[in-house]
Image 1 (cartoon, rainbow, N blue to C red):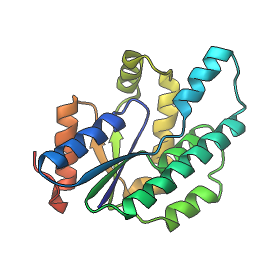
Image 2 (image 1 turned 180 degrees about the vertical axis):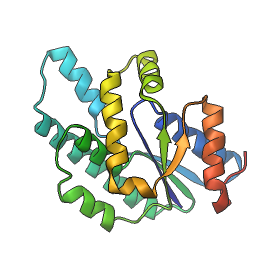
Image 3 (image 1 turned 90 degrees about the vertical axis):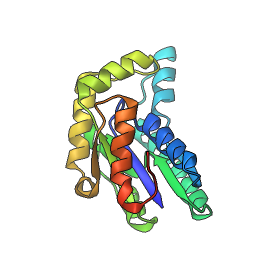
Image 4 (image 1 turned 90 degrees about the horizontal axis):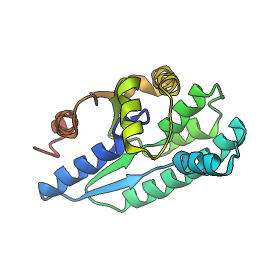
Length: 193
């Protein structure tokens, strides 16, 4: 089974993915965590450090290439794994970023979403932009404004794929969010917490 986690920066995707995999393993089940990063945080840090700002389309091209590579590798790994696969981010995330930046969807990412194995569940961690911003500031590793997070949240909601996502209220503490994730996955009898 493949589960994908999406959501704005600061929604808790990575924490939730790790918790979900740990809960499955605690139940004695095989579980694998795969991360599909696009390198945005690293590029932001390098841009800040060296004072270089990539043009929007060039930054998107670099992020998209890295995200596509990671997603393809993750699907190859998932195809050889027996058990629960949790993907932290996916192509939906890149499509939302494009939407938020006013860039076109393009053809490659939607085609890949139609061509790759369809995840059993796409869980969207929903959190207010203000809460997400507080979390981002607290971790101190990247910068996003409330306005950017609001635009990204709106962009996710504008995706045609959004209608098929299962909404998870990610506004609570990690234990509360994990309980909501388990409830969403429970009909598939994978976990019990």
